[in-house]
Image (cartoon, rainbow, N blue to C red; front, side, top):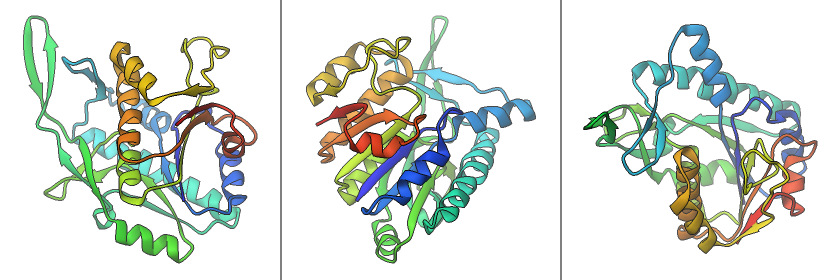
Length: 263
C-alpha cells in the first residue's frame, strides 16, 4: 500500500496525478492539500490568514472558527470532491473523507502556541492540534472492498470539535497505523532543494540523519516539514519520495526514482 500526499498548490497537475493513480496496481490512500483554494476563498470572503511562529521557530496557520469554516469549504469541500470526481472519471472508486468523519483521524487540541510579541511571550489558543490515532478498521475495510480513500482536514479533537492539523503529521499517523510500503509526497518543485529558489539544486537522495541536521538549521514551515519527515521514519517508513507534482506523470516519475528519495 502507498500513502500519497498531494500538495495543495495551484500548479499541481491534478489530472496527471489521477491518471497515474489509475495505473497503479497497489492500493493507496491520498492525503490531499488545498492551501491555494483556501487562500483564494479567504480573499473572496475577506478573511485574513494569520501565520504564527512559535518561540521554538515552527510556523503554523492560526485557526480560529472562521478559518475552520474555510478549511471545510476548500479542503473537504471543493478540492476533495473535485479530486474524487477526477478519480471517478478515471475508473477509480474513490471516497472523499475528512478526519472528522467516523473519527477517522483523532487528534489532541493544542494547549497553546507560545509566541513572542515585542518583549512579551503570549499563549495563542485556536482550533488546531496533532493527530494521535487513526480509525484503522474503517480504512482497512474500505481498502479491502476496493475503495480508495481521499483524506482532507479537518480532523477531530477529543471533544468532537473539528480542528486544523498539518498534512505531514497526518501522513505520519497513517504510516504508524498502516505501515505503508512507500510514501510519495508531490510538491511544486523537482524534489527537496538545497536552495529553495533554485530548481537546479535538487538533492536526489537524503539520509535520515541528514534530515535531522537540516531541521536543526531550517526556519518556518520548512523546519516543521523536516521534523515531520524525521517522525515518518521513527514511525516505521522504509522509503519516502518527494517529487514534482507538476509533471505529466508525477507518481510514475516518483516511482521511477525522480525527485528526492529518503531511506
